[in-house]
Image (cartoon, rainbow, N blue to C red; front, top):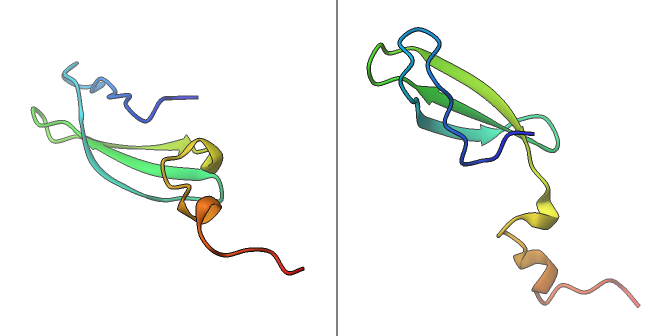
Length: 68
């Protein structure tokens, strides 16, 4: 599993690629696109996400409660 902070190396010019965008992928995954500022190459990577390890846990601590 790759970390969300992972910046891959460009296979063409061997420079670090910058994160261009992130979007939702298949269930449990995010699609990250990286772009090389040197040669313009782009690469898409699917990264597994665990919603329980996310900073977005507001729904767990919100006022919404299960029915009694």
